[in-house]
Image (tube, rainbow, N blue to C red; front, side):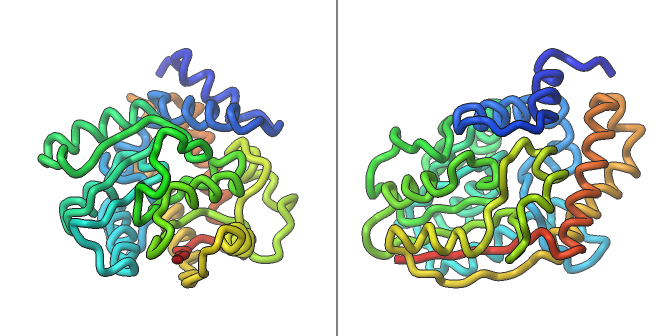
Amino acid sequence: MDVSRDQKFAREILGSSSYKSDAATTTTARAYYNSHDADTFYRTIWGGSTINIGLFESPSDPIPTASYRTIERMASLLTPLTSATRVLDLGSGYGGAARYLARTYGCTVCCLNLSEVENERNRRLIQEEGLESLVTVREGSFEDLCSLPEGGFDVVWSQDAFLHSGDRRAMVREIDRVLVRKGASVIFTDPMAAEGVDQKELGSVLRRLHLESLGDVEAYRRWFGEVGFMDVGFVDLTRDMEVHYGMILRELECRERELKTQISDEYLANMKVGLRKWVEGARSGRLSWGILQFRR
């Protein structure tokens, strides 16, 4: 399959080993998730509704089922969610979590996501499910929430997106600003460096994602503590990340002939290498993943 200009751009910037500014980090992530290859891969392998890491109860679990299980687990930790709850979903992807929260609890949800391609799909799915009165979609970066009102939300939710932030501490300050002063909750998952791991040990993972570093549990605790949040806890689900990326890799390999009719050979080859790195990192104890929750 021919590689289009946007695919080439995404490939080139993701392949660079140099660190970029916050703006360039946003541009990098946007170009990647807007590319035909990435969008087709995630829609095909994840099922087109979510793109988050899943929780597997069995090796035979479909990937979309496992991904929704993570959403359900996170939502259960926020109970009681009601029709009065205002949620900001940062890095919302295809909007699976936002639509679930609206459909299940009647929450009002604002999706903030930098990929126009993903946002357009989210809007179509919102319309198909008749959720236009509850779920809205905005383009934007989660380091700059200036278009959103101060104290306008009760909950900030995010799944596997904060790793793309060029300034996570600034992001936390923005989250603090848009949340209500009392009774606010933050809940998110994020692929992270394991406790005590030197970022230099993660070089191959970081280069593939065009990142200088990954966050870690202690850093998030420190940053949210600085703006007055209490640490509710960390649910360590690193084993699920290892299983998830292993499942994605096997699915890719089983369907590679089909995928090659839609996605460039180079993208698929790079994806296989990247998935193996994530599996190895989780298995070796260098990477961490789970649910973090903060409250004030």
